[in-house]
Image (cartoon, rainbow, N blue to C red; front, side, top):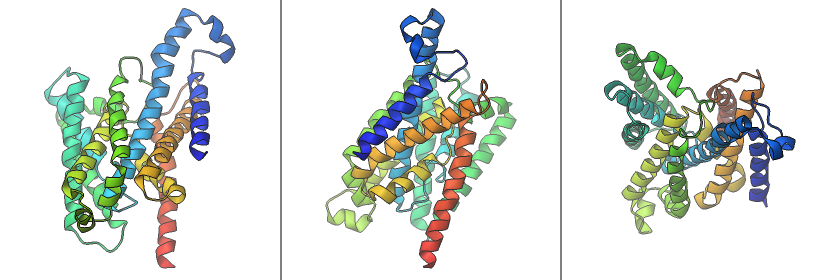
Amino acid sequence: MKILYAGLILLLLSVISVFIGVVEISPKSLMHLTENQWNVLLNSRFPRTLSIILAGAALSVAGLLMQQLTRNKFVSPTTAGTMDFAKLGVLVSMIFFTEVHILIKLTMSILAAVIGTLSFMWIVKKIKYKDAIFIPLVGLMLGNIVSSIATFLALRFNVVQSLSNFFVGDFSMITKGRYEVLILIVPMVILVYIFAHHFTIVGMGESFSKNLGISYEKMMHLGVIIAAVVSATVVVTIGILPFLGLIVPNIVAIYAGDHLERAVPYTALLGAIIVMIADIFSRLIIFPYEIPIGLTLGILGSVVFLVILLKRRNSYAS
């Protein structure tokens, strides 16, 4: 029943999203829309709403997967440097392959994200830590180093404007013909659900996985590829959506537990709902203008992250 309620909430928010915009379209006018209104609906409003659902759901599931693989509730595509590496991959393609097709940008971004995520996993495996918060701090430092390299390259090759415009999370530029690549993340989410039991076992440790006949290395590599593909696809089409893969899995874990097979549907729905609410708020706060959703999610995510951090600190202290 909870899944049904979440689905109904998402459906209601999606309907609201479709009717928000500078071009006035109301439910009453659906039967006699002008040609311009039809164009707005088909080429802007529907693609934007679908993109919000896909990006929110997939990025949240990617965060859930990374937390399971690293056995750390503070890890996500944002705090592991995955998105920063994906950003670097796109920047490299923009510098060395001018006027490149979006699929080439996506391929370069995925390769960089895979390399970055594997590097983070290697660091996690090699270092010893006593506090769980140390791991995401390492990821944030790694991401900041990569982001600094990207900024240097952007300054060196005079593409700073393109860098800033390209990577601020924003759905305002999503139109028909620019969002279809997001369909690639649908099979990634399905794979997470299909192999949810395997990923859950892998999250219990290498020796435990081998005792149950699960290939630890193969499942780790599959998880990294899934997280990288999702993160890179979102970065290329929309930009960086901060903290989403961090806060949503933590909220879901409170009610649904840590088993992926149970948590994936809740995580996907809640992620889509949060992004939809943030997008609606971003469009209405200074209507008819809008603020980038990356800013809205950054503020919301940082507040929730601090609350989660303080709660875990208190639980450890007690």
